[in-house]
Length: 192
Image 1 (cartoon, rainbow, N blue to C red):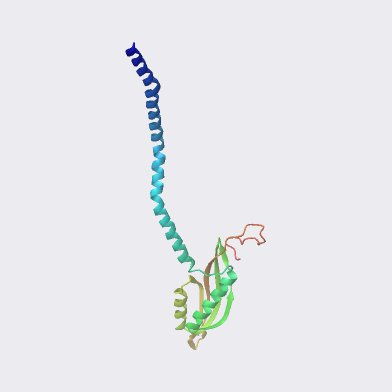
Image 2: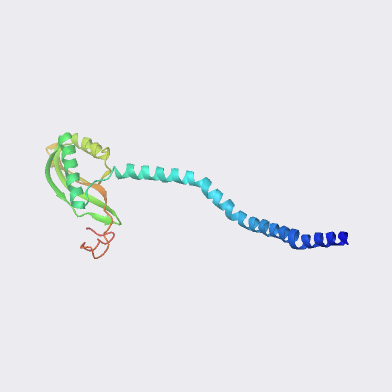
C-alpha cells in the first residue's frame, strides 16, 4: 500500500507539479521566440544610434558653416545695410567710384531672402575684374546676377560706367504664431 501511495503521489506530483511547470516553460519559450524580432530590431536601432548621432553632428556643422556664409540681421533691411557696406569696401579696394547705390526689394522664397543691391560704378576697365573677383571670393555667399558695362567716352574706352546688382542671402527668422502682434508673413516667391 505504501508503494501504491508513493506511485499515486508521484503521478499526482507529475500531473499537478511537473506538467504545468513544463507547460509554463514552453509558453515562456514561445513568448520569447515571438518577442525575438522586436528585440533584434531594437538591437539594430541601438547599433545605428551612434552612426545617426554622428550624422546629425556632421549636418549641424555643415549647416553652421553654410549659415556663416549668409548675411546676418533679423530683417532684409539690416542685411541690405550689411551688403552695402561690403560693396562699398570692395569697390574702394578695387579703386572704383560708386556713383549710385540702391537697395532693391528682397525676393523671399520660404525662409530664404535674396537681398539685392543695385550699384552704378565708374572706373577703368582693368579695375572691374578686381571688383568681381573680390565679390566672388568674399567670405559671404554673394552673387552678381546682373552686370552691364558701358563705355563712358568713345574716345577713351578705358573709362567705364558699370551697373551691377550684387545679391546676398539671408535666412529669415521663424515666423511668430498668428495673433502675437506680427503682420502677415510674406508670400513665397514674392518681394517682401
